[in-house]
Image (tube, rainbow, N blue to C red; front, side, top):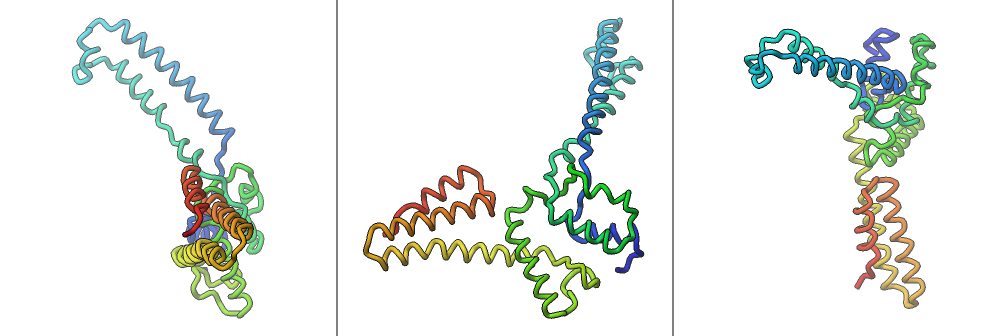
Length: 248
């Protein structure tokens, strides 16, 4: 709120949390530029091959430091410029999460300080960001924790003094706090899933209840690893095999 309405405050909002650093990939435009650049490199490569074949002083072909052929030097300089590729990192960014996208849309529509036409990029399908659908392993739990904190602040009707904004409608919590709470919740949930089967197995006598309890606990345990923590396939198999071993 220390920044004027419009792009100054919108930029401050985006810079307040990494999750809001959303931008378009421009996949089609980048593909078109890549094709153009590829053709440009092909043309320069052909010219360079012609210059090499027509070189009269073979010494220049064996020593870069002694090569004084200005035409070849110009071609290499153009090739170096044409091969500078900045698209790879942008194309590798994950898709922006729906929640982060909606947060920015709600702010833009709520304040009305950004031109609607210029804010249409938030509705594009190629929107990407550093913390999208394959971002943090704890993103699901972190999202639940953030929602719970927002509900608590709204219920108690207290200003969000712990956030980065003085606006009562804007909640930007410290990333370390949310992550710490999320990790604690996951840790205790996994501990419970590990201990409950042991307690049940020693408390019941029938074999069927023991098997059912172990299967349910193992299924929930593996599901959390796969869907919430996004563990790798090898880690899921190892954890599933270990979890499925009967306690002694």
